[in-house]
Length: 377
Image (cartoon, rainbow, N blue to C red; front, side, top):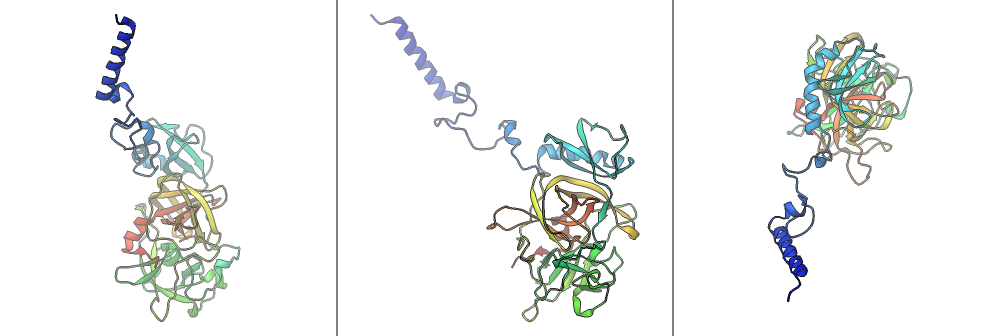
């Protein structure tokens, strides 16, 4: 006679095995791969939300995108508040997506809301935001005159003004014409420079304001006008045509030896937390990280007035990342691996009073304005 307990056990085990084969997701758990017993490594509409947190926090991330939409709806009213100089989308100190509000000084309690449409508001005191072309007092190597082919990241300017900024990159058009890339306020003097006026290296501030045609490296070719009348701007950018042929190669495409090297031609969209670096005329090589996206900021250009920019990239560093004279520097990734090329992220043009916050135009917006690409050949 069969043991009834053993018989029941056999039937129960058989039933469980049948169910496991037929509907593994129900019996063994939703992450059980049929017939294998391993997690399915494919992202689908049914993937748990935890996987979403591992996505890059760029402007396409669903949570960042949602906060940007709220920020855009309230940017005008927030910018109208006393002491506010900018807004952006970033993270709270605990890593929660939030609206960042930049102020020139501490705002009175209650002036800036703690949240908007349920999104937390995080206030950052940056001081005023300045275009970084103003003369700098410290003399450093990138201010010197360089022989051809000269590196990027060094002093440059328009011959019509005693000032200095930075050569950001060597760029080219489809027809092979080569240009030096910098800011409007470095090469076009806040819209005031004539086409084609001479562009020099170093900028005249670094030659005691003297005018020397021997320092001419090219001519102002194109610039995007800056609207100082209250309209919104996207880029502060200009290009100067330089000599570049088999007989004369005026401009190289790498930084000096103490810099990050040669930027690649493939651009990278900024994302919150992205490690970045730059090489500029005044502060040379500095490193930081992207702290916010979609920034709307008011920038002080001195005698030219103020201008409002939208969709800007915000960089933060515990030490000054940008100083006067670094305007026009190329913002690139910091891959932490010398075998990997740093890739362009933005064109730096402004910074906070301390220089710890830096602001850059997204590089794709800059390149598309002129129909050029980064020349890495």
